Image (tube, rainbow, N blue to C red; front, side):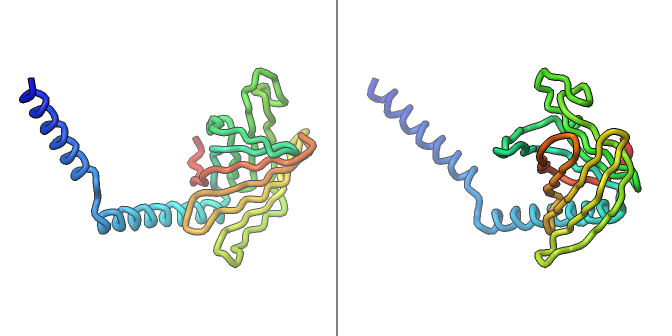
Length: 179
């Protein structure tokens, strides 16, 4: 019995040692992975900046903050929570799917219309900022997007006549391909 316990202990310790060796990475491997991730983020950032400047983009929400207390809606569906611009046409859509019908029938709002007063600039930090007004049939919105330097991550502040406050969308900016 002692031999079985000793043998089992040896096998377990060897297995743990092998797992530890195989899962630990050298500092050069970690640095290389970090550099690759930074380059991928930078390339995504270049595509996002180009999409914003071409007015051909979509910002897919991965978090939304709204209301006077800054309530957060985590993990919204990007298919129903987004904003996009295609030339001089734009859409802002929120759908909280909370069981209550909103202006768009999905528990939120949709503002689709013409883009006016478009301003695109780069601030001192290197972040790209896009501001515009969106005028639809019954609703209008002011949109202020900040695309962070060397990234496709962005924040968009949306205020309009559809609620008493403003909403902030956090997500990724992607070139809009029309689908």
